[in-house]
Length: 105
Image (spheres, rainbow, N blue to C red):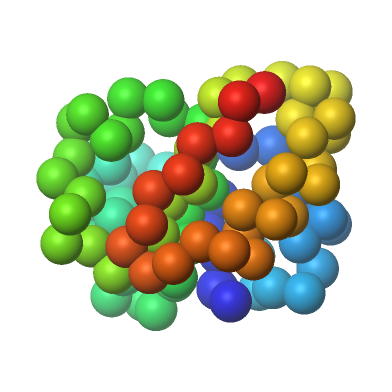
């Protein structure tokens, strides 16, 4: 699966998703894109999942017609996120196209 990390998603999480291709918005030069633009370009580039820490994304964007799945981590704290690696991995494996899921951290 092609996964894109939004700004704020801790990059060390990448090593725990090693069965997937993981890029960051920063690496792709997309740091300045608004959320809607980022979702559009990620879909156009073939990403299947966006992992974000933006808890307001689902309220700010119309997600119903998206192919891109979104996994929202409800914290930016890497030490806290590390404690939920198993839940994050399970969510990545089970999320469906266009789906939205939150992981309480």
